[in-house]
Image (spheres, rainbow, N blue to C red):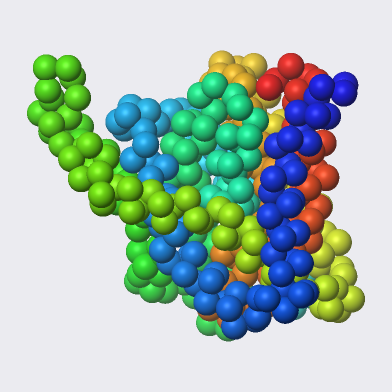
Length: 336
């Protein structure tokens, strides 16, 4: 048991320490609210977009994407979305809180915490699989977040398809992923050298450009975690106690329970291969807290911004313990 606990501790602590650093810097006055807002926008629009591009561009080609695993993951996320809508119907106090609770149930911080968490687990092939799964997962997260938030907005539940598609196309994460997929597709069409390598690659032919983009991408995760720590505010908990009491466990306990139950059933029927790499990927997408960008999107779409922010805060705090338990359990069960 002790080696499994040590293994889980090593994976979770880097995330916690960066969040605590941000909290400390805000409380000591080095970070101001205005700085955190600017840093968050810069990270969302540029660093995370670069991270999405580099994660996909790092794959050898489109064959590096396990399409069966991607399809299974989308089915799991669809089930979590339905569960979140059911939860919101019976627990949300106001209409503008329903979409926020539903979003929290299925939208994890996969883009920011997922990949570094899997890299810390040091499972062969897990980082590549996780990077490949970010494309379908992030596209689904953003598409369905717009749908559920619009459904419970002041428009009376009428979804403007044109605006929906426009909002998705403007999302920096979607743009980064789209450019990454385009680069992979172009690379597959290029002629090859006698050694079997493409005649042109960004990293080989334009290293100065690729180095700049990858440098920006490496800022994304630590900056997001530090800014998240600086944004922690605990004053709104009392007025949102009922919603948080249901929303936080739904994200941290319900999502992993449903997702892994489906994974075990699918593996038994031979639909997916439940390898250590796929288990690590599922932990990253199911066990991580509610996405930081969910609060930004809730504010832009007229949903309850306070509840969205508190769900991010408390799922992030709680995930330190639930991720530790989930990783330790998977290690002791021989899944990792």
